[in-house]
Length: 72
Image (tube, rainbow, N blue to C red; front, top):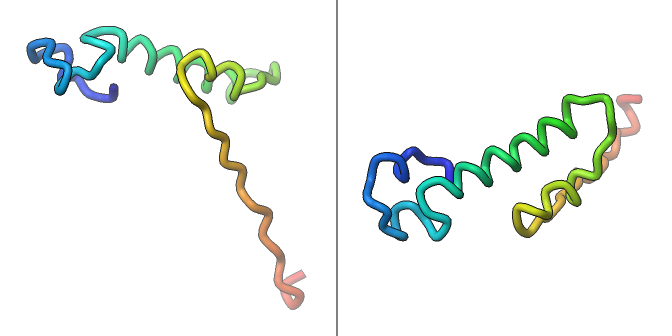
């Protein structure tokens, strides 16, 4: 959940989601911490494995783009 609604509104699943008032924030914080640890620290981390504990992970790698012949 990326909203403050669970903190201010009644615990209605349509508003706060299936994780309730606090669990969504905990999951978001834990996933963010895993990402930032892997990105900002010098120790390499298998990020998909680290994030798998928080749900399904899909990794989209950018396609290498070809450099036009005249621009080399």
